[in-house]
Length: 335
Image 1 (cartoon, rainbow, N blue to C red):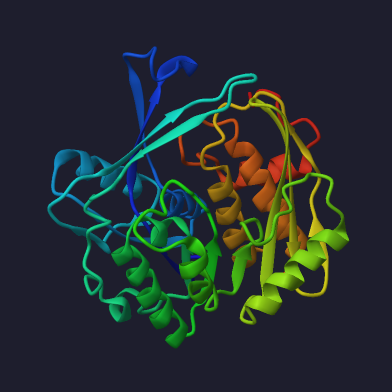
Image 2: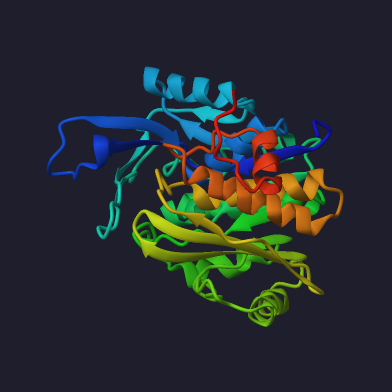
């Protein structure tokens, strides 16, 4: 697995969450985590033993140093994280409970990452020896310069023949810099090979969709973006804020591969669930030598696992994911 070199691009954030499911107006204490969509993907991949490097920007202070140590702990190469004056992006998460939905407040405007110059990164050097590039729609959402940086990275990745994966990750609160996602995303997606299938253009959120629904949605994506080779879908059913069902599907242009449905009856933290899914897809496409059923099974199980783990990052070993796939009763204590 180390022969593959994966590059991710995105902002590194600090997340603050009120303790014990308290609301913002109740708490005097916050738990802190490091996260961000692309960092969450990189953390999972590094934890699975893959060679992964994060491209980002952090300010020059002790909290940023702690973020770097977090990344190195999970095997992420941080040599492509630039340091410059500015602030660390923050976001606040109020956890959902029972019939009360969660809430996210972003505080990332004018961060070091969002203010980075377009030519700050030497993409020829960054992609030297790389085989894969992953990005998400959150990065071009946060600022015009971040959108231009993403476009430049994709241009060089295409020229060098890298495989490219993307997760649409639409966040309405973030698209505030002057252009909408409809104006920016299509041109970026033209250079991608592996795509998430849930975004404003292809909506298959209903958990009871059929193979035909997935195939039609996948074909629609591939018709719009001819470079696309694989479309992946997650399917969530919501019974309450803490009780969901979860399943996955993958379409390769010919066949739909579906997974079993997981009952997530006591969700601990759903933040990062989609990132755990995309990391599982990337790992599976590398590890299982064309076995697309095993790939989507792994991605879906990894994401289901994440719903039971605090924080943004899916702190799970690949062996645990494989055991979850094969076992009918994974919840027993490992003694």
